[in-house]
Image (cartoon, rainbow, N blue to C red; front, side, top):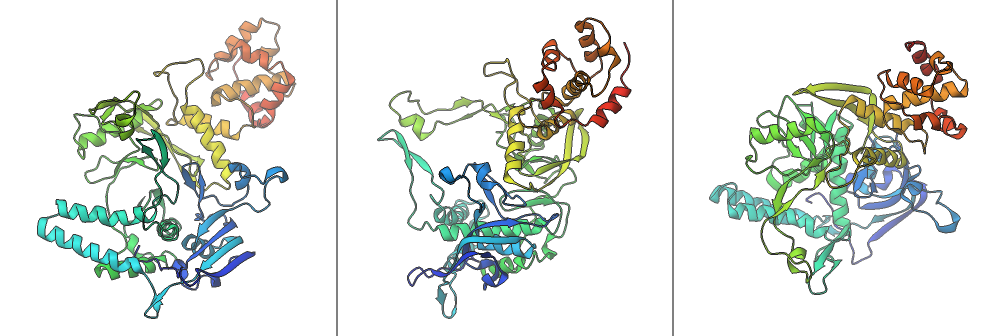
Length: 516
């Protein structure tokens, strides 16, 4: 907040319109804090961590290119089809970083805003306000102690500045108890889409700049986990200087980063799901509530979450109690009394697919007797790849066929075999159903045999089909059913299966198969 410059709204906020050209470093006279917003397309070099965001549902990802965004998100152009220019709206800090990382960024339409000046310098109205609150909070800590009511009030007030600036920038709804319907909460008296977007963009740019400097294991809103012990030494493509200037102005100390945790062990599940059993290590529970009887912040809480995560076979039932919402208390029908209500939502602890799993780096650890697979990741090339990967993962985590009711089993992505199944589904041709990686192997063998691409003596012998199915099911790759056998007798089904089959690999497998 202390870094963002103000815009001169009174004298005309648009300083320059950028249209139908490549974005240049000269478009950023104030560097990373240049007030600029543009609808852009892009392509980052291979090996670079991209920094231009795309919102997909409630998630934000950073694809290497903007190719196919319109088609993937359904942003069509009516009967004329999809626009040839596919991109996203982005803010100055991330756009400036993209150029520093060597990306090609093309602008369809963009606006550089006129900076408001005060005493010959760019105005930063929030800097003095935040500086006063930081000083008041320090005084409250000294007088009443850390965690005192006064200190916490000032902390909440300081953090609420951003919340009020961003209120209803993305539409939010609240419950109208009189009309008994949801309605837009509307903006606050100080809602400023410009300030909110620039603050968010600047923080993300710093994090994504760090991702191009050091290896980051996990990243959240304003922090990361890394093997690097001295992150303060990095200049982050000159971004660190912006934050050092602001920190120095606020508290007289230019230190940018604060070490929150140190640990020698880590189970990293997803964006907000990771745990260390080391004292002082990280614990982010991915939305799970700590059961009653376990003290928050204790070693027992860490062990409970770790054990829950590494032993899961599907979504985790999260039993807890909470008080009813205002909507539940105020509605005319089905109104509830105020008191604790038991809840039991099902929570997934699986990787959220915001980055591409590199399964050629797949490794498996054993934690308390349970298999836990891990791997390195890379950015997705396109939004469409992410959506396909996410949807396959969600299907694996959803109810299995033939089951009903609240207690129906679900799947998850934890073991080597489960990740192999996901990989096989992702790499398979569109429209083909893949149950497990082992089942795929048997199906491909049968399809290739029936198509005449390879010969399996057992399947070619004049014996009842039941015996052939028994032999296939005895190979250690799961059961092969009569329905699957009959499906492979249909040419169109075989064509789907063999569309992406590796015939050389299948032949090698067939040569090693046992006889009766």
